[in-house]
Length: 112
Length: 113
Image (cartoon, rainbow over all chains, first blue to last red; front, top):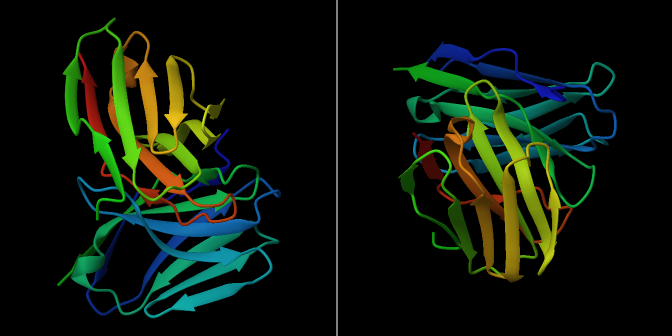
C-alpha cells in the first residue's frame, strides 16, 4: 500500500519556465511534508518542507503547496534551471521516531 | 561533507552470503535510518534506530538485521543475500524525531549475483 505517490515518473521543461511536481498521500496522520532532491551517485538532499498547518511555503525559487482536503502537495520551481535536473522525492512524516515515507520519485529534466 | 559516511560504496556478492553495510556519523545524532532505493518504489525504510541498542523494523525489514552498539555506527546486515536485495542502500541521520531534514549518506550500491 503506497501511502505517498508520485504519479509522474518524469517531467521535461524548458529553462526559464515553471516546473510543477506533484505528490499525493493517503495517510491523514501525516503532518509534515518534504521534498528531497537527488543527483546521480549521491544521497538525497533536503530541499523544502511544509507543516500541515500551512498551505504554502516558499524558499527562493522553490514553493511547496499543500492541499489537505485533497491530500495533495506540489513543488513549483520558478524559473527552472538546467542544474535543477535531478530526481525529486516527496516525503511525509508525523507517525513516530521521525520516520519518513517517500514517494517513487520524479525525474526532472530542464533543457537549456 | 563527512558528517555521515557509508562503506563500502560498491559491493558485488554471491547469493547466500552474509553482507554487512556500515554507516558512520560524526554528528552525534540520535536517530539513524536505513533505506533502500529501487526503481518504481522510491526510498523504503528497512530499519531505524532511536538510540544505542534501540532499533526497530521498517516496512521492508525481512532478510535484514541491524545493530547499533555505539552512537556513531549503524550496521545493516543481509543475513543471506538474495537477488531481490540488489539495490542502492542509503543511511540517514536526524537529530530529533521532529527534524525531518535528514542528512543522507552517499549510498552503497549492492549487487547480488
